[in-house]
Image 1 (spheres, rainbow, N blue to C red):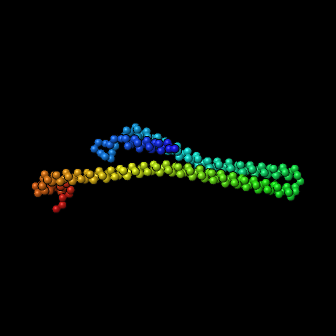
Image 2: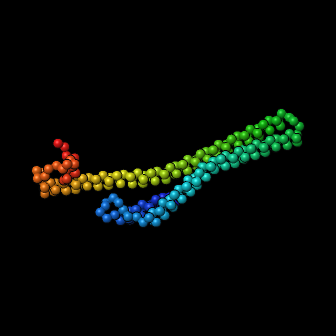
Length: 199
């Protein structure tokens, strides 16, 4: 089941894909400021909400352990109370002592088992929450990295295209006005190519 963050990311991607390109450009698009601001605001509001939700899940570890300790203490206290009642009802004999020790030992083993199960449960909950949150952040990282790479590639392609067009213009001007028909200007800049002229 997709989270609210994943839904918003999908919505932003769909909106960006649907935006038209700016005139005479293949790497710039036209977006409605109100629409993109609204989507980004929703993403910002949902991300802390998701993080807080999983932080609350992780914090439940303490509650689970506290509950387990309380149950363990209750078992031990019950055993001790029963032992006290047993000793009070009967004379203090070796058999009564052995039975009391056995009950206390059983209660301690049961309490340790409860605490161990609670610790394992808390660790599993924490690991699950961390994995999910890391997956959400990884998805956002992938989108941002892809956007950066795409824009860099488009920028590089645009620069190559502009350089090629510049060379065509320089060549055409040179054809119209051969080099020997004019002298280099006083400022030392070639009027055709814009390059510095050296003696």
